[in-house]
Image (tube, rainbow over all chains, first blue to last red; front, top):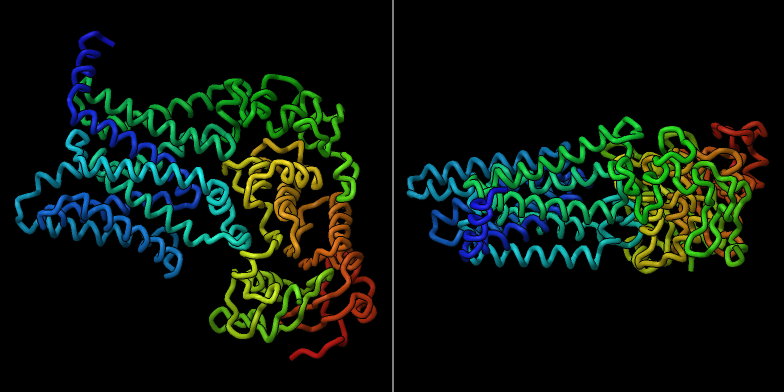
Length: 359
Length: 241
């Protein structure tokens, strides 16, 4: 990077509005990266698109009535998220048509208000394409509050949220209030979108929700690591996008989304070009890099380093290494057998409840 | 107090009556096999008992409470029918899936459940990359990890090989001997009849409800050899309408 480019960035960072933009952008990036994974796994990924339309309509309403747009868009978008959820779950609408229904209505409202001749069409355009440098203090507060709530949610309820996205029926049987969890997720998504349309624009805000988790999912990791990577990828994309925009005087929204695509493409390419790939898109990109494809470095990555073989690359690396299944100093079902040549090799004896304490 | 009490329960989907006036109760230590032909309402019965389907008539109580309240207060293990088709792209390791059966972090209980179902060696693999039988064992481990008072299993052995199936039934027997009530939906009349004490034979309504010996006595032997249509069960310990 050229010296004057770096100087441009450093100089820009001395302005309060640029720092506000960075704080709001990073907070929205963190929220959308975390929430996005849950929404994608629950097949609600298009909700971001629907909420973006609602956000634009509510911003138009705010501008038309003279209120600060965020004070209208935050509650209206959150309420619309609940409405979409209710339509999806209770109305018998097929698939994600509830999202399309609400999005169409919101787009029509936005066009009607914009066409009413209030003289705010230019302001509205900045929400359509994003204008991160124009982020207000109120928008920064909403972005930070949303990010704090999202982090708290994940810290306190990660197990419950996992159960909810993995198997909602089982979560319900476990005594979880899955309806409340679903509502909490979409309301937070609504808040994130209401600020996100200021950062990247309503045309691009859904990409903040979809791209980071989709990139993280390619890594082939377990849930906790995928969640961490999704959040990290999102934050890095926002940071890179804003800095590139400042350095080269580009639109920040488009730069952020393109940074997301670069990371997505990079992970995809590593997965395709990696050594010892398995095909069918089932392998771990990290594993192919030899980083250790599963949590705690025990998984497929080690296995692909070449010890033993397992059809379709599905085996446990430890199994292929003949290490057996010792865990944390206690015997596993494999009982430390060195005969294990793959994960599919399992103890031939039948474990007993009565023998548990002795193994 | 009964573990479960079902009185005059019916479930309708529009004009289709999936279950009609079902009545039976489950006591502590019961091991009940629910059998019946395809479409006889077995899975609907399970879902209604777990509060996943709303009955159109009648009453369901678990531990003396409506299902939603009971599930929040008591430990009920559940193995859904479609527990062998995890999306290969879903980012969940075996350990994470088994641990999701617990309300709080407990690595020892998680490891014990994985040992019991012989999936400890698969702990760090993604669930969707496993075979159907392995996935079923993982979901069984999830059902058992919270040491349930009542275990409901919907077609639990469909994807298991014979050895794993025998092992599975012996585990269930041990749990049952410890006082865990078990309700198992199965087509495998032969295997389930070796463990269960009572049979609920369902064909949208209850055609037989009573002990296994009585059911066996009224059913031709060859129906206990594997897949069986059980329409030949004759007579009833209890009359149902």
